Image 1: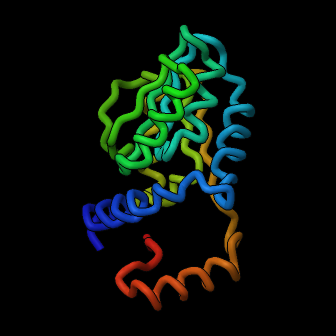
Image 2 (image 1 turned 180 degrees about the vertical axis):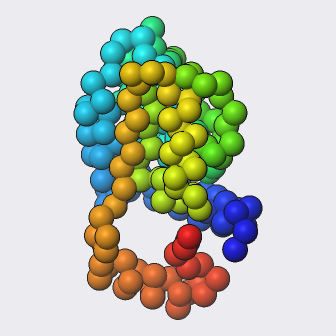
Length: 179
């Protein structure tokens, strides 16, 4: 599968899932997003980039932490998830956060643009993770902080296999995204 096909497929899956992204059963997004931001010890005025930001589970806590003097930019490929994030930020009165569609491998920001970069459970969606991490490091200022979270091997088994087997019965064209 080409990179473009993989990106289009991931975009379709996450846009389709957005109606349920903030369901109580998926509360781990908010828990791990908040914990990731807590570990970064962001300061007021920091500039933060959150790639694969989804519905804002880490970007919104980052915006709260950096305060009005700081800036947070959330990037994701799924416009419907970004709209959820925008709505949440607006409900909280956050004016220091923006969300935009983008593929974080090709953002094109200048070197050393951010004080912190966050990627919570998203790095494994890119075909070349090492190149992606190099790109993130490039955009980080000296002394900045890069936080990447990932799943442990087989963390959701056997539930993951049962889930995808059930999906395959209803929608054979929808299967897990593989590298």
